[in-house]
Picture 1: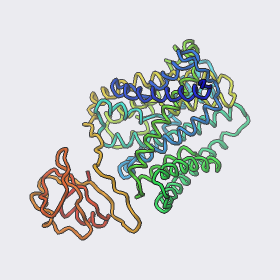
Picture 2: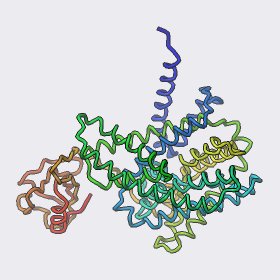
Picture 3: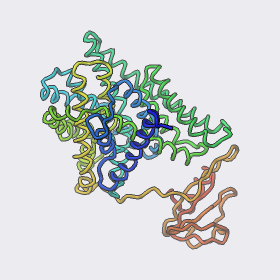
Picture 4: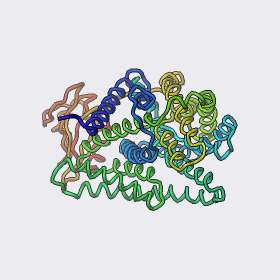
Length: 489
């Protein structure tokens, strides 16, 4: 049987995804953001590359982008610990809203001069590039076994997760003003407020709805829970957008709300959405790479480099230092935040919006943004670990430890699985479990020592540094922890 067109499409898509997975491995080794390698892979496979794949449909690319970004942002929300980021929320949201606007404003002045375009056109170009991608930053730090001191990591996480909606709103507003010069700026401002408010409200409510449905829908097959959650993510985005709100903000906040609550199949669902986010990134960036014509980047390379450097060393630092002046952060911490302004998925995706809308000079915006993202990934991405160490704001990287078992809550049982650490000098050190007078229902399931886990019983002696896997209700935990001095891992 002859191989048909459909088979060629399937093998081509599968090969690109496989190469994307391998590219992520290379990214870990060389410390370059995976998104850059995905883009290069798409360019190599494109019409001007060795693959020769013809792809020039901005409308289809926008649909792919909407779905992929919604899934990526939802996964980012699931990975955000609200109890940690809450204390830096004011600074993060100031950078994510006012910071994005001011960054676009400063860069618009420079871009309009460099490319000899109107201020409004420069504002559109700058708005497209105004949001950051800290996910790529932390991927680089993980590959170099580097982390950041508190509160830098949660601040950057929350900023990057919540600043995309502002960039989207500014981009859409500028496009509308260019196509309809008579449109009112105040209408755009009210639209911005409406979208942020509706996005926050719908995101919070849908997060609660998703948790309730997962916990109360007794599905016959465990494999249906990831299908349910994925459908609900896309519904959250669609409902919010239909009502006139920011769908991207809604799915991100829904993820945060869900992550802060108890729900069944938690571990498997988190793993599923992490994998789905990676697949979305590969599909998104490879597709964007296919859409690029490298020959069109050469004529604008010089001017685009000026804009890239202006964004990295002028616009972002000025805005960060001004907005964070009242904060308790020291100069070195502010400098690191100013440097960690890596551009990623959203700017390239927003670069498609003018193409779809038919804005004059749309190809120029897309090519400049694409070039700036590449420069940002190479310049900032390669130097972030070095800058963090030079400023003294780096911290030892602690890889996430996988627990040897998964606990699935059942109806009527309020207990949760917790990992506690036994510090030196606490009352429990040297005592057998039976002598600790633990409340009924408080179960020490496993005791971790080094790389081994021991099944606990009444005669098990607690030692300094033990990691205890405990099954208990929240009120029991609040009673036992202060009395025995155990801390959350």
